[in-house]
Length: 169
Image (cartoon, rainbow, N blue to C red; front, side, top):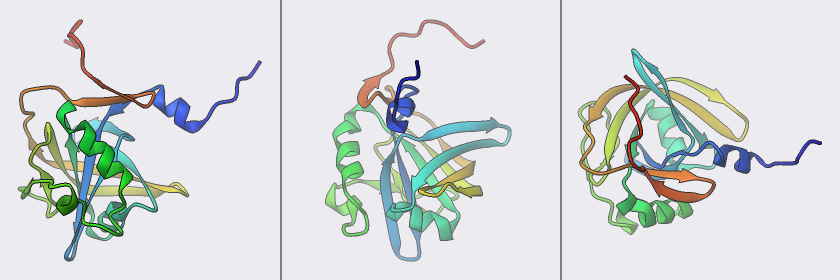
């Protein structure tokens, strides 16, 4: 017997890192919370992220062709909720929530100072998915992780990484 499910439930079962996606174009900057993110290739390093067509940040990435992935730590969990629930169409979320930034080495969008690690990305492909756009970005800049652990979302709940149980090598 087939069980009914929602896309949110199915995607929530996969889980993944919680990140801030930042973008800039002209005199506007944007930040949003995202969880639909994946690594694509190692050489060249590429990531993909899916952004709603209603997203203010997406409207900046589209013309600029660049974005940053700011992986966040558990200490930013409440900030992630606030940023995720607020639209950048009406408010400057950087000012509203006192998000400190620094300049990237390559991209022109703001990078989050408190991020666990940051990837600077140039858009190399985009695909319109109807309600969202999937962006594939080549990682052109990388900022080493700070001490600590990244924040993860699984079935709508936040987690940190547990103990190491093995190695890929």
